[in-house]
Length: 458
Image 1: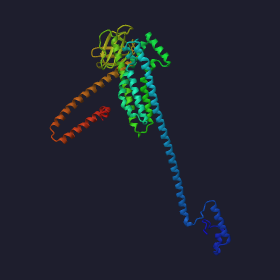
Image 2 (image 1 turned 120 degrees about the vertical axis):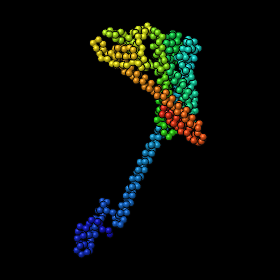
Image 3 (image 1 turned 180 degrees about the horizontal axis):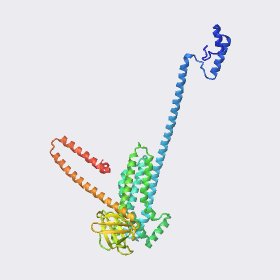
Image 4 (image 1 turned 60 degrees about the vertical axis):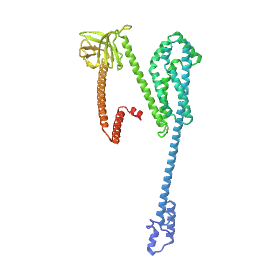
């Protein structure tokens, strides 16, 4: 029998100490104690020499149980990730289908505006062709481009879910067409409003819309190309978000989205410039003399009523601020040409804020090399801030232009000297090495000034 540890203080141990023999009560007591200890799990019935091994095996089993649980957790996570990836693929496919379906709807709508409005208006001959061109611009060409793009997109998606390379291939044509349409859009809307006043045109448009049973009028259809560019941006952004970076279409989609946004920005910028130039021309046409305001670099900035102060008297004036010039005209009256009071280039004037006095409030002073003008205006703060901003921009542009010209001249001279040095080199390998070094310097210079050009060269 194996002795039960921790029982040395029992009655059986005392009897053993007297005669050295075990007594029945001791054995029975020990067995009872063994059974009790074993039953509540505190002592193992295994031999003492095996207790450590058994405990070790139990710990190993426990570790196996823990590692098995970890593996189950990993498998569960893998299943969840797999489910997430599958869900991403399904969502991506849904967005791609949405792109295709919306492109079909867009082409169908363009067919309506061209076939149901443009062509019938040409045949009806109720408007000059030039006026129709102003309203519809290049919408027929846009329709043709979208038809071609739709056919190519359908062909691509029959073979899989990639189409980014198609976008990159078609974008150059899109850039030209949509930019032209966007630039002309505001003018087209003004022309449309004018033509709607023609009774024959108004009757034709109402009858056409009624015959088609269409809730959308021509004005809604004319907005389609502008709206579609925004839709392309939104759809491509969603599809790219659902495309893993390792996907074969990821880079093409990323490049397409960036190029698309460049087109939108460029088109918006050019439309704003065109609108601004038209504003300058409009002001020029209001003048009573032949002053040439419309210059390539000139941009309209601000306008408003001012009073010009002479002693203790003042006279009403109307002023225009351009990026390089301030023009002050005698009070603007409806239906009458504007007579110039003074005009000063911003480069030659200083701007000074004046405190209120007993006679006038909200005053500021413009001082040129030969004249001084004191003006008052409720928008005094706006005038001062904008005048100072324009002057600062002019200085910055002048410094930049001067530095640019200086760098160009220096670079040209340096290159000429370098070519002269090359002409004296007899070793072909040395010559090739120097040419390569210069090419690396030029490439770095181009990248620092315009990274896009570097990517285009690449």
